[in-house]
Image 1: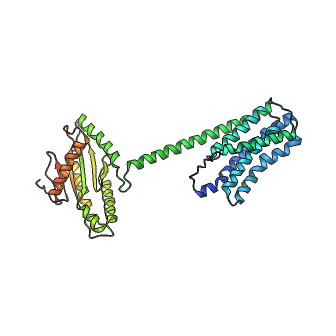
Image 2 (image 1 turned 135 degrees about the horizontal axis):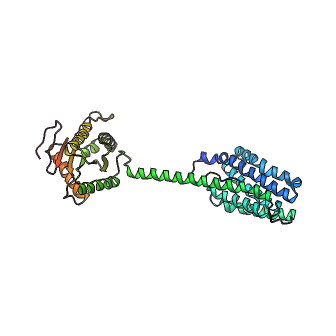
Image 3 (image 1 turned 60 degrees about the vertical axis):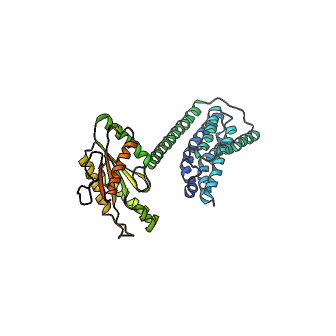
Length: 369
């Protein structure tokens, strides 16, 4: 019998599998140590302590160390530890007749030992362990022919209770750790789904959810909100002339600039290809324009280390949330119109729609649409 071993799923690395025996070693010492007191208490009740006490010492005290040495010196420690786990079950099977089928300790040790096989995560190990347990129980019965003593004395009950209590606590703790690990991994997966891997900005789907919420809030409360659509100028020629590797790097550094230029309350995302979008909630035109100009200026100042002569610029369209924007698509279309005004006005500038200020060129002067 052992306490629940740590999970060992099939996809663990080779190193972790090889060190499984190290993790199980202290648990086997604890489990078998508790089993020692249980078996001795039954041997005292049946009067067999002098006759079979050495078996308890060998199987419950010495065996955990022999199992550790067996796995450690094996060419395949993981397979050796699997064999050790099967031997654990066979040992418990042997003790069933040695304990004269005393119901409480026999059932507790057999159930806990089988349950521990589930805890390893090794496929069908619990099933493979049953023949050894049953076989040793039958063999021991045929050889020893013990007289059944089903009732448990008070010392046997007292010796068995810690096994039940500690095993239950160990199972609960293991389950708690598993639940926490799964919750943490789910959160990490959620964050990965929310982020664009190339730029670190929000992915389109998540950004649209946030933008939709901002639009609804702006329409219901009349709080100003602005949408910035950002497009890298002449991006297709960059890909065609310098290759997609340079194009990917341009997208990455532009995304980094946008991420560092917006406020914590702003929602910046990659909309698709070389287009980016930023939602600024509770923001007036002046502050939204300042954010847009900061992004434009920092993009214009970018230089790629492998291609320092390449100058990146951007065209940015701004649109305030309006009551006429019934859907997010309406708002996006308005910001897109402003962005194309900026492109048609000469690029490397910011344009505002609707009913806002004129497009602003690189020097800050308004540009007629």
